[in-house]
Image (cartoon, rainbow, N blue to C red; front, side, top):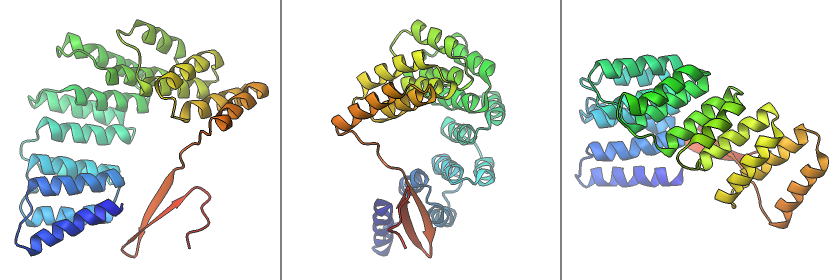
Length: 283
């Protein structure tokens, strides 16, 4: 958040020196606000974008769609997109991503159909958003159909990210056997996201045997990531395997491994306040 403030200060200083911002300036600043869900700063930037007549620029509009979506203003995202005269694949992908992260899989599917009908060719990122939307909405068959259409219909070789999305899609739906079969049929080993998704699904659905396998694979890929050990210990606890639970926790203590804490932030009185879980130090 401090870095965003510095970026704003640099931008203001440049304008004072007579250097006007361009579409790259706004794209960078809006993207930073989107990543931090800094809505107040993002709205100020949107006003400046309109002032400098960049609101019809497809690339700037794309990051505005993304920013409003990540800040929870879905209607604003749709409005910004609808005002773009000729959306490029970047703009379409931004809208698809917004629907996906909000769990609106059917809207993502409709948007994809509109994109194809408009003559815009989907790319690899398009299908990541599409599969994510299907996964978060329980649209398993639709997601599988689009995954297999990647190569058959659009001539694209699926990447590791696409395979990971399918693992997540099947895992969330509790179809762990199918997910395992899919993993075994993959032309490459799943990446960390794929194994983490599978492990999370095994934890939720109480499949200890598959969960242990996923945890071992994830630990091999990312030994420094404590998430696998935390999920594995949770899996043991759900199964009431207290000896195994204590064993995992002891291993974490012996290796001085710690779970990185999560933080939340809120803007109050033109100032950003940050606090952690059970943080009593902030007034």
